[in-house]
Length: 205
Image (cartoon, rainbow, N blue to C red; front, top):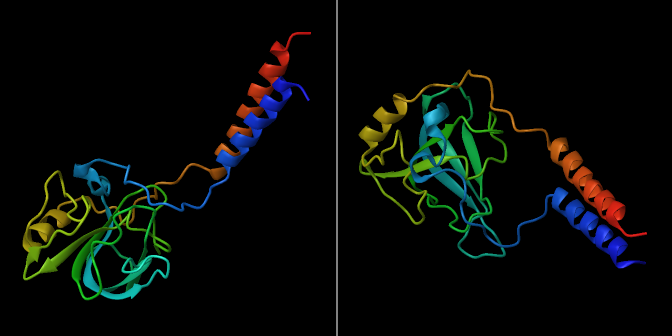
């Protein structure tokens, strides 16, 4: 087998692997958004509520780092979602949850791509959560533990509620759809085929 042909096969194989979503074995840094609009709240709110962290689902591989938490909804601030509980799943980020069992929280879900009711398998990439103690917002570890609203970081529960209520209510707006998965599944193999064809075409006789 010629070196050119081996190279073409290797390129095609690598592109095929990139087209298949893999399992993240190591945590990843948060890379979406900026500090002021980390959770896309400026685009409007689908749902905002007050509640309590009632349960932590443990991760046997990493002690003291839950793989999910359950939030009990006590009061809806914005939106028409009729859930009594919301499970938030740990994403691939390194910081984990900044709210833990027993914490009283206010949460908000912005108008994000691919995120819509009933919010199954929603991760802490997509849920802005503020921990409230004695009317004051308590920041936790990580830059996302004190989400900004309209370009400002709220300090009190009263301030947070007022700012959230001032955001656009997009609960009934059309969802922001994700691009179709098949587009990448078709594009990457096609790109690999084009590279292979170009390599073979340039091969000297």
